[in-house]
Amino acid sequence: MMPIHELISKIKWDPNEKPADYFLSYYDRILKSLIEFRFDDIASIEDSFIQLYKEDKLLSIPFHRIKQIKKDGKIVWERKVDE
Image 1: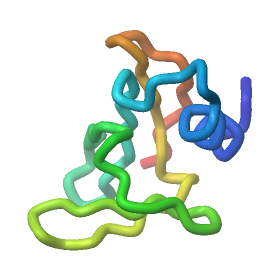
Image 2: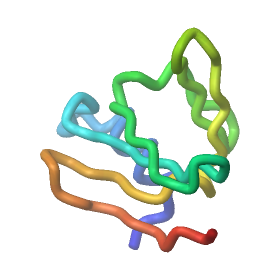
Image 3: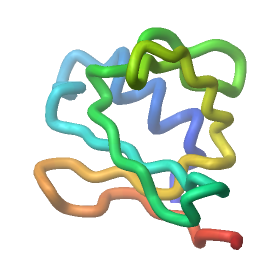
C-alpha cells in the first residue's frame, strides 16, 4: 500500500488524476466516527497536515488521522481506525 503522503501528492500533482473524483475520510475522536470530505475542499497541504474549512473554521488534520480514500465511490486506500 502506498504511504498516505505519496498518494495525496499523486492525486494533487499527477495530470492523469482528477482531484474532484476523490473523497477522504478522517477519524473524529470526539464524534468517534469517520468524517468524509472532498479532495477539492482542501485549502492547503502543509508538512504532514491537511488544512480545510468546515463551518467557517480552519481544521488541521494530520495525515495519520486520514483513514480512508475513495475514488468514484470505491475505497482505494484504507488504514485501520484506532479508537
